[in-house]
Image 1 (cartoon, rainbow, N blue to C red):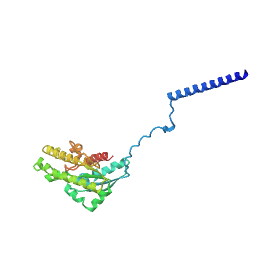
Image 2 (image 1 turned 90 degrees about the vertical axis):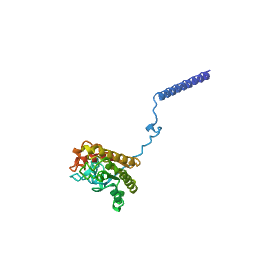
Image 3 (image 1 turned 45 degrees about the vertical axis):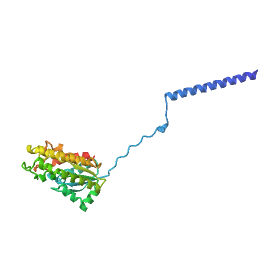
Image 4 (image 1 turned 120 degrees about the vertical axis):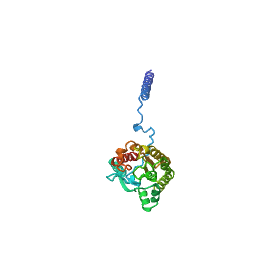
Amino acid sequence: MNDSRWTWRSVSLISIAATVILIAGFVYAVNDILHPKGEALLTSLPQETAAPAAEVVDEYRILALGDSLAKGTGDNSGNGFVRRTVEGLSADGLKAALLGNMGINGQTTAGLLSSLKEEGVQYAVRQANIILLSIGGNDLFQDSGITGTPDDEELTPQSLLAALPEASKRLGDILQYITELNPQAQIYYVGLYNPFGDVPDLLVPGNQAVTLWNNAAMDIMNTHSNMTLVPTFDLFNRHLDKYLSGDHFHPNEEGYQRMGERIVQAVR
């Protein structure tokens, strides 16, 4: 009789213990569902794919090519937009060095295309990773009799536009040749402005020629990922009295400063 009593007691205790364990497990499961803890350090979650790192440029090695604007003619300080670009990049904490300024007064697209075949010029192009290019103004204006002083009788829509097809073709050859010499370099082409926009008879033909030229340049550069057109037409339009030098053709110090600032924005 006593054995039977202990047996039932043992069974009762086991049943109670099992019930307590089941209840505790149920409570834990409910709590885990309501308040999931997750795994430490989110190791169970997929890692986000890192964005490809942008190319790091240790130093901008800058070369200037082209005409009198590249040279800085009209700027009494001699800095032009080229040195102002170097200074602007350096002021941002970037390393920028000017390898050389090969701007030549009166340089045309034909002249520059010929210069690019010289060994010294080719060597400089290969050393640069930033090339600042200003060319085309002499093709449009000088070939039309414009050498710094407007001439109402010689400058016409026909004379301005006559030079455009061949000159723009040479511009395309120049850009392509520079790219072949140095595929890694970024080319920043400085677009043209109309220096005679404040002369009533020259406003329309000048604007037409410059607009068509800049559009042709943009069409060429849109096919190359390493080329950027830096517009200047809007900088000088209606501000010629403020930004042109005394020859009424080249920028003054303030005009070159505005151009340099815009190039720095493009490079950054």
